[in-house]
Length: 457
Image (cartoon, rainbow, N blue to C red; front, side):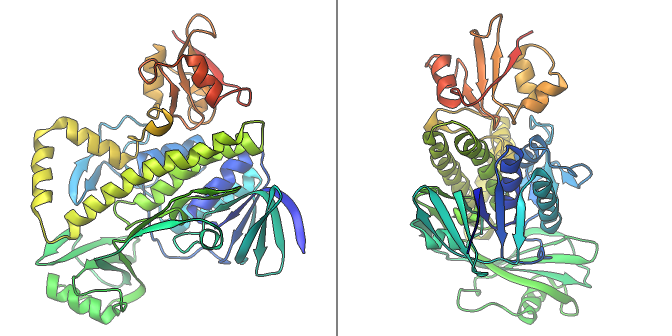
């Protein structure tokens, strides 16, 4: 049986799929989300949101962002880095447990008009004429103009269509487990010989232990009894009396797809790129994928933009992902590798160079991305836009930043000083491109976006 046609079907209602659903529904598209699980899993796989992710959630109007714990100290490869000078209304790292974040985003997406079908397993898809037909375990086929796979590292959308993942094999394996009823010292990537221990509370009742040992491999999953013995041998702390409520293993393997788009099917988040969970990179990168893709899909499939606009998603996010995964591999080697010299050298360089500290802080905060392959510049902060205009921003102007196309103009609408895309990135500025402003405005806005005109003071 074939149900109604949708503009977009999204497979996966985790943070990434739910954010995309709300962003597209908020722009007027009909959106169906298919989620295998009936309820939100209790496990917190990731909880750290960087400044850029919080900017994105705020710009899209996600409620409930205030009041969460945050820190002005991040780390790069285990080396503490202060984030005080990040130019963002959301400077720092913010902690929202993944189950809570998923519920927030699902509720917001449904309020925006998206339809969620939980307990529904996606079983395959095919392109028929200009439509995508998605099959489910219930026997219902859902037809849409666009299909998006947000279904994680084991993506059924990716594996069922002509996507081409490329893998870097693992050579280190780690375990993480959530334990009730223990009291241990807080540890961050603490070396004990050739093993590394991390411990911290993720709730009032639960402590997360993360442990690397060169004895772990891909052939078996350590039991909690084994982890408890290894933990005691390394730290002297006895956790064997605790109740292990969740245990998981991960590795330093990475993967990314060679093609992020096949016809009218797209991949986002871990379905497109998978890497070890260093510094919350996987969650944050997925949210950034959404922000890049959502306005483009809305302009193409909810408006009159050419398909080439949506095709820039692949070029831009592949570039950003390559940078992110390179940094993850560097950090993972610094944290877990036997050679401690790279970490010592970087620590010395950070102590000597304020510029390097700022560059790494911007990377941790997620505000350093520039899409050079499409000649698209940095993201523009509210204070950066105010400085360019030479005056404070009105509330409606700040609200437009990161939501609407913007032209900052002088005495006339033809006197363009800045062109800013709906994702907050520079489409044109005098120092970004020697092209005329008109060319960039035509490329990114055309006759399909109506930019907000902001006059310089």
